[in-house]
Length: 429
Image 1 (cartoon, rainbow, N blue to C red):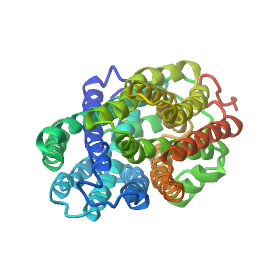
Image 2 (image 1 turned 45 degrees about the vertical axis):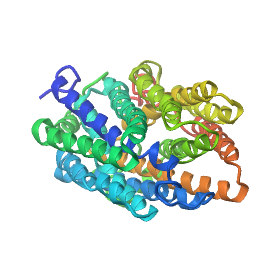
Image 3 (image 1 turned 30 degrees about the vertical axis):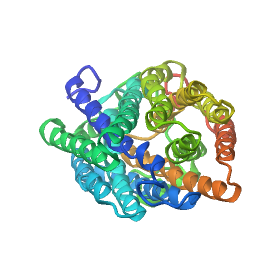
């Protein structure tokens, strides 16, 4: 058993395919349902708090399940948690098809939160288990590349399916095919990667950790077997670097919440067709997904901090520009700019946390970071819903998101530090 992507290429590819299916499952909820929430699912016009309720539910559940998945995977293994996530997704397309009211959509989104919390967390953690330390940025970049390409493709395909088959039938068949294929693939081809994490912990104890050989700057004062509360407080406020990354993860989800729940409604009100909306929002997801294939590797060379801060600012600027462009082309270019910013920040926030998390509790650390990050869906969607309800102007929500992103990026610059062990190694003792 060796660490390294090349040495574990077949299993690494299976994990890449898994996260693509995870992205398809999330993406089927992102274009059609918000755009047709009024005509198809009975949401009263202008009821923005009711509209955002399904993203609030998704963020709260997914955040909590990320936390649970990280701790659980260190006890029962990554593969088992992954399969449980696929079982949770089976009822989702059926519930959408038969939904008599918006409440059923909210309930389906709760199950989606369970699915995403278990499956996406495990695909990322498994790739980190398999990779060497100096491949971590690339491994996470490939993971997020595959997942968000899946999100974008699903948003575009379901828009066309909704036009040809109807919203409910299109989502039913797309969802059943995606979830069924993913569950079967898990049972047939996915292997347990927890032994790789345990091997790394033993090698670290023997001062021969895989990778570049530089000592990471692990947090001080952490017990040998930290309990859940110790881990939560460490990431949430006791370690300034980890806390900075967690707040950035929470704030950046404001962008995704806006693209998910506000942008389709706003674009539909401006007269864009469902396929046009799919391509505009899809440009954000496609650029985000494809560029991560390169931005993860980039951070392995230049470090995590600069891409994170630059990405936060660029992403916010892209969202802030969208209300200023009247044409579909201009809107698509602004959305793509925001996607490029996401590609710079997104995999590298996870890589930064993984850099300074000890392999014995890395699964828990990633789970807690992902808890705060995806709780940003709930916070962001609630804030966006309140703002839209109070002002009646959806453009203001875009500028609110843009300002929050720039402020959060500056907070990371002031509070965090470079985490790549080669660029900022711990001093020898």
